[in-house]
Length: 88
Picture 1: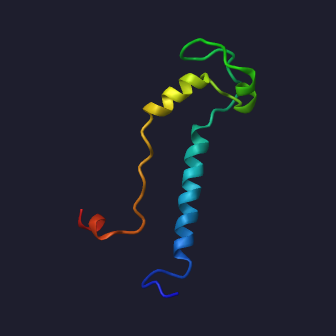
Picture 2: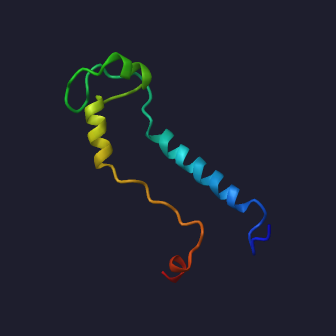
């Protein structure tokens, strides 16, 4: 398929790169090491199933949910080069 200046399979390459970048961001945020028995924020006990499922976990599920609500989503990269992005 002709894609102008793009090489064959360029869209698939872009999808693969985006996926790898998202996985790398998620892995950087993943806790490591020994889990805490009590939440670092509220002091409540962290349930054993959570500690077993997430090695290195530092907060309880309630506090983790609150952190997720406060966390801003990662900014995306415009790989398509739309006309509007070129005008900026």
